[in-house]
Length: 185
Length: 85
Image 1: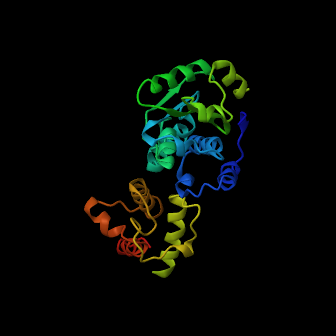
Image 2: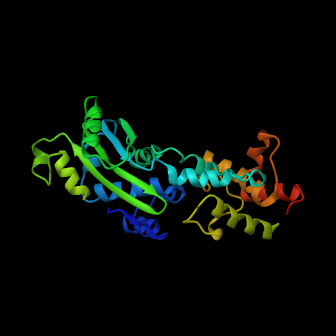
Image 3: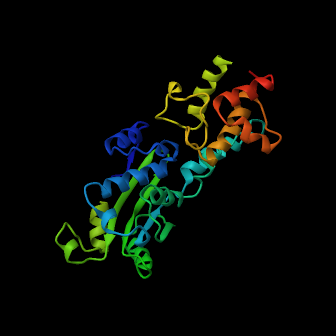
């Protein structure tokens, strides 16, 4: 999903396109919506979730803007002391790792998770952090870059699994920084 | 009361971002939590904000919340009882 200005109807259209049937989607902040849509795009048409146990599937994500887009909305709601009406539903999204929680809830994943913030897409960082989770009980992971700020969306979600013969016969691609950088571009 | 219930339905849909629900889908006597609209704890907080935002009502006793937010009709009755309808 290339970096682009997201029109207001993008998320609604994507929700319909992927037939998400998940009403909670509409209550989420834009970062979580982007993460859910990109994840659904990655897992659609394959049986990644079926062949990996929920407790052995990690989620590892990185972005640049953290939850700044939602932080601003919350800040605006508390700027005026005479009109002080912060929204609890907005406030709960003022942490970037909530997008991981939303993905985990939707797909019933209970494995390791990790969210990092860095200045730019860093393929090696993503690989290194995913490997940390794989050193535990993890056998698979949903990984990627999910960034949203002020109408600009930028996401790359990919699926990581420990390769065995059954996977090698599919569209398996060895995970390395060169491949990730090519995918991101 | 009926006019207030209809107005409240629209405000609940907007405040809680219930994008796939229309006012006609909401039974005013159905439970708001659990089997009814299936609202969660964050939604409960949003309903408290709704009362303050649209009706300038603050719930002084948290224990009253269970009765006030039982259904759209109980919410409407509470608003009327506060003289804010």
